[in-house]
Amino acid sequence: MGSTGLVWFRNDLRVKDNTSLYKAISENEKIIAVYFFDPRHFESEIFGFRKTEKYRVQFLLETITELKENLEKLNITLFIYHQLPEDVLPQFIEGRNITKIYLQKEWTQEEEDVLKNVKEVTTCYDLQWVESYDQFLCHPDDIPFQTKDIPRVFTNFRKECEKKASVRSLTFVEPLPVQNKLENPAEMPLLADLGFEEFAVNSNTAFSFKGGENQALERIESYFWETKKLSYYKKTRNGLVGKDYSSKLSAWLANGSISPRTIYHEVKKYEQQIDKNDSTYWLIFELIWRDFFKYISLKHHNEIFKIEGILQKEYEWKNDQELIEQWINGETTEPFVNANMIELKKTGWMSNRGRQNVASYFAKELELDWRIGAAYFESLLIDYDVHSNYGNWLYVAGAGNDPRDRKFNVKLQAERYDPKQRFQQLWLQTKLF
Image (tube, rainbow, N blue to C red; front, side, top):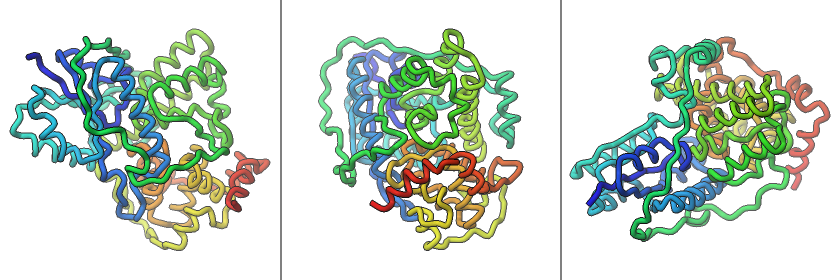
């Protein structure tokens, strides 16, 4: 009997340019795959928010549905469980001749704890754990820094990477020979199974897209090739209304249904065939920012979750529940903050410009514990990414990588980016209904 490789999908929910899948197919005769809707992801955390709210959950369900279909085209069965991985995998491995388990390398505490639990309960099997750093634009082996030497300032990181780092080519896999049909005892869960009610997508949302690898590739096709809006990205990226002021690719990047390398190489192709300008560069610039926060997280580990941050700064943070509720519900004294917070609450989306302003207002004006704001974003944002979310909150709170420790003037920002108050009117009036 030939060897069987198990691919454990976590935040790499794609078949194109997936290093774990590529390695598994290269090294085994048979492949099976597994995904866990871990119940811990839907529980409340220390600040009282559910770790994953309905918008992210719906996007995830759509993503896993497409992943299952795309794996079936490769003749690979995806087993789906709404259970703890450590409760399932010992029995799952039994009798399947699995010798290697392939998965994306994660380093944040919760993911490390789950893997540790699983390894402890599977010690009776002779398993090789094949972990791959697969969420970066530039792999840790391909940048001009050791992890411990990652610069504190983004500009220094970016300039060195632009000069000396490289982006790897994409990996593709061919369908495996047809295998015996494997029966999956668990069906794809519904929102209700995970503890959520069905909901209608808000008609005013700037993010009207569905989850899944195919949807991500369709968005690239539309934003790059059909409308050529990539050529104007730098001019429109601070927009607030509509689906095309930015690429919106962050949501698919966040759960790994598209790789940053795929986007990078598509931009390079676009530059060769259509247009090369500040806007095409700026999308790659944003991917480098995303890498930077991942490397800061890799360097500092749990410090990114601590109130004093990576700078060990001591501030007098408050925990005023009334102020927190006003911020969450869009009832502060700042209409621009309120409009953005109502948009988030009703859609699971907020623009980059909005995020910077509401976070700065929360931490610098209200002087509230920035981790509470970060946890609320984690709960609601469809494109939540642990490294970018906590990195950005540290940044605006003055406990991270901003050398200037800035504070946003929300009134001036509103005048600059919403001069006709179109965005504010759109969302402040929805609060009435």
